[in-house]
Amino acid sequence: MKGRTPLVTSVSYVRLRVSEPGAGARFVSDLFGLQRVDDQDGELSFRSDDRFRTVSLSRSSNEGASVGIEVWDEAALEEIGARLRERGFAVRAADGLECRRRYVHSALLAEDASRNRVDLITRPQRSGRRYFPPRDAGIVQFHSVGLRSTDHVRDLAFWRALGAEVSDWVGDIAYLRIDGLHHRIALYPSQRNGLLYAAFEVESLDQIMQNSYFMQENQVKIIQGPGRQSASRQIFLHIEGPDGLIFSYVNGMAEVGDKPWLARQFPLTATSLCNWGSESKDVPELSAPG
Amino acid sequence: MIQLKDVSYVRLSSPDLESAESFATTCLGLQIAERGRKALYLRSDERAHTLCYSEGDPRDQAVGFEVEDEASLQNAASTLESLGHAVHAGTIEEAEQRKVKAFIGFRDPTGNHIELVLRPERSGRRYFASRDAGITGFSHIGLNSTDPVRDEKFWTQVCNARVSDRIGDIPLMRVNAIHHTIALVRAPHAGIQHINHQVETNDDVLRSYYFLNQRRVPIVFGPGRHPTSGARFLYFRGPNGMIFEYSVGVDEVEDEATHRPRQFGFEPASFCMWGSKPAGMALSNS
Image (cartoon, rainbow over all chains, first blue to last red; front, side, top):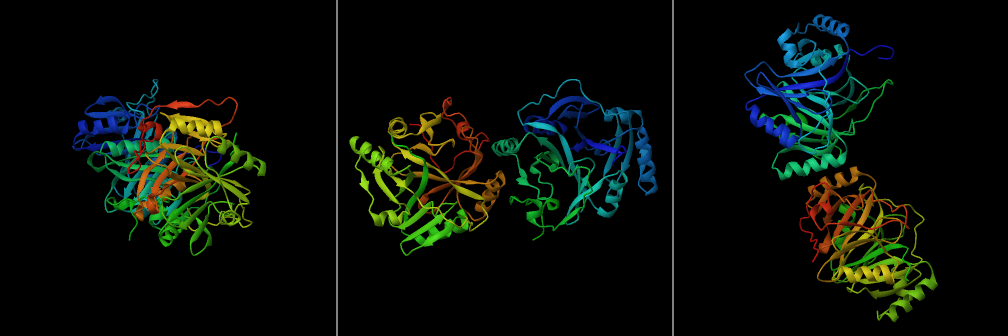
């Protein structure tokens, strides 16, 4: 993308649907360590960095969950809209209320082939106040998401239309790059759709390990980790949140940069998913067969 | 003053050399240097050996420290004798068993068997591990002490050790730039409390954690990080109850002249800043 601006720049937020937002909020703030900032129309918002909010929780009965992807500008938004329609994906412009709920200036509401909702947004709100977390979990920023995919070929076409590129493969798991980092979005072949995890970068290995012992002491289930992804070299700890949603602490992802990069194929084995040896017993998307 | 240069080796005894060998190679990951009928020599770095198992009573243990030269060895012997320590001058055969030119043996005030050695052998061949644990070398020991205040005086006033930090009354002592070579541990009797090997990276510590867990080797502390030395660590139990440690990233004391020991409270956070708790490994201040 040398010499031109990218279409999309970052993963901006996840709006999650849970059965009990109040209990979920306690997990997100008291245990996971995000700052609660707002409560609008039953949607509870949380900060993790200089953005106004990167996570929200609301009741399952409200409109569906979505992932927010920040788009470079209005022209890019138009370009993306045209590309997605051309490829047969459902896209529509968000109305004023929908934009307000998302704290954005404008948005296209799209769905990938698995019917994961993806909000393509411009000018998401930042906050003038610095981020002040309720506990010292060492969170630096909202970093990336893992998405379940029931149709990985078509879903890949969706993300490629936004300008994402595959950094590496583990089996058919695709790590997608939208900036210089190895990946910001990972597509996991699955029997169903939905968010697999929302990952938050912490300062260093120290915080990954401190959070691991903190979760053990508080009897919070660790889904997987501490571990290190072989392809991206990212250290991770996957925690079970409300309604089985996974919240992750991550650190140390490799940079790919802007040189040509040929995606590498890793086999779908335990050592490709974690080269330290951690395994996930209960989440099929994070496990290798056998 | 007795000038210790570095820790050189540990000698352990076991009635079952076969299990000791199996653990040392398949779990710990050391290289077999030499295997005799009654002794097993193991390498961890460029030295000819850093750990030796002999057939015998597991309570029979010794730790060797290298001294500069023949004169230092003689001076050390007279110093120790003048302080009332019985000094054993090693025979040629005993020196050969230790792969050193000469040595003397004595007991520290707690009764730990200490050896001072001259010219321990190096190996021309590089170290080649039996498993990919990432070991870069034998680095330090935890040494039992029935009276850490008294024993700190012995190691720092009779010998040249310096206190880098203290946790309660427990001193972490260095004999060179490395944060500590001798860590005293309060215990009711003499003995080596743990044997440390350095590994290359954090990855090695965590990989070994999962690897040893899978092989049902008891993990007694960690993975964790010491706020004193900064090292990331993993302690686990081997044959005859001996505790082994892998660690990485031990600080070096930058300025010998101006370094002042820091005092840490005797509490779990002083041993691990990540929040791991010892399990099956006693750490006591009184």
